[in-house]
Length: 275
Image (cartoon, rainbow, N blue to C red):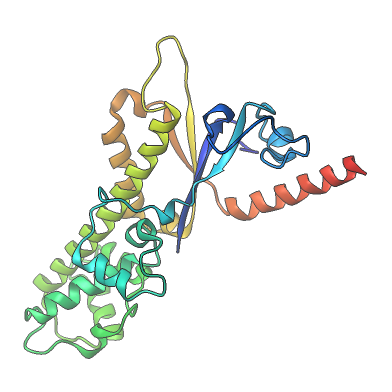
């Protein structure tokens, strides 16, 4: 928002995930009465930097990683991962879209395939170790463009101690990476659509020239190209061609760190004004 006043949504897609958006004050049920003069809900950062009207808007921290619903499709792999996690029943949305968990979902599906003799009669022992396949490894295999899928072969050998895989097997593994990443990306896009619908920005109002910028931070979005492309393509698919032209996703490198610095500077200024 500091660099681009058209930004109204911010998302982090990295190890974890969260989102925030600008909301009209009158649309916040928990906000009763006038805003305190201290600006506890709309800080001086939003007044001086974000240029939001003092009593009209606020930034909502959604904590969307903790979203769960009967409408959120979960597989047996998601349910098992959640049950065996340190926080079962929590952060369900984050567990299907973020970098902390995509590689583990991939491992669990691959382990199931191994039990059905994908690698032969024996399930590779290393494949049974939780989180041995991180999302960066999954991404590297997904992006392998070598004719013989050498990156896939090397990772299987170095990490899982699986040698002598056929090219056909390696192609199936790349396809599995694509399935897991695409699902996570499309679920992320669905979350973005939900915010846009809440803000009334999923349609074009007659006579209005509307521009919506979504600031996106996080290593998953930045480095996992197939995931990023799938997310952006899915959002366009959901919005339609006309509305998509008014929506732009911009990479905000270390947006969290910059935002924290701006907030600290803003609060310092506020304390000086009070004194």
